Image (cartoon, rainbow, N blue to C red; front, top):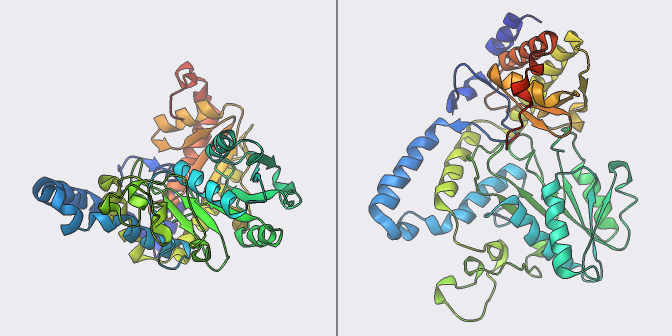
Length: 410
């Protein structure tokens, strides 16, 4: 395809105006929304109001006057609508890692006769790190971590497994699990399920209640566009609320936080999964960012995501670039909203693309990730990225020694 063919696809795209809601540099192809979503334009004004009228003028009265104290639940319920959860089952708090810790501990307490956290080999490592930390804290008699290859997950679900911990969309290759199927299998064998939705929430339809998921987490700064370090979210199905407890029993999770009683009493429902004082700057930015979802359905976003990634894969296939291989599944139902390509010199290629203002990222050992946000990426972005990739590989630009210097963030 020629570059003007991609422009024609954009001209025919009924969702092309969605991009106008985002503040993006005009000279940049931004394909890293699966790491950090772009800035929705209206968030700037909302943060300015927070700084001037709320924090700046009303000071501490803003906890009541402007509803700061209710933000975790209000934002949680807004995210709940995006992940298929009825109100009262999602709260917005802390980070993904902290929320994984809370829910793993909860799962072990709900399954006291079982000790194993089962996860997938090669899944996002922070979740496994947290699981291993919990095992070290509790001891192997109470908690052990076991990893199995993807093909062996179902057979690994034995009567020792308390909880199956998985990421729906794999961060490296973009492959996608069937949440409903694995959840049903795990539950039939007596285990709970905890799904990490960091690479799927906001980019595709999710149906946590309908799929009978037990627990889930996800971050606010990728496809939800909440900004760097935005707070995460936590889902616990209502059927578990009465029996659930979590170990980080901070004051915000107390039934009567401002009574300051010496003994801890957990709040009712999902609110007991709060811990410390929420970060209002980040929470307000995320709350404002979620407004863009009022303009479009998740089915429409998913259709656009599939079309963009299909177009990019087709363009790369046509180039037949040496040493490059596709690792993301071609079938739409088996992938998320990214395309991952493998190459022995992936890091240098990534840096050479960034120098050409095609912003992608690298994942060790050999993956270049092209993350397509269905909100603001265009077919022209797919075309320019493919053209830049061809230039970098055919000219050997990636071999420049400066591209071998590893940055702290890749």
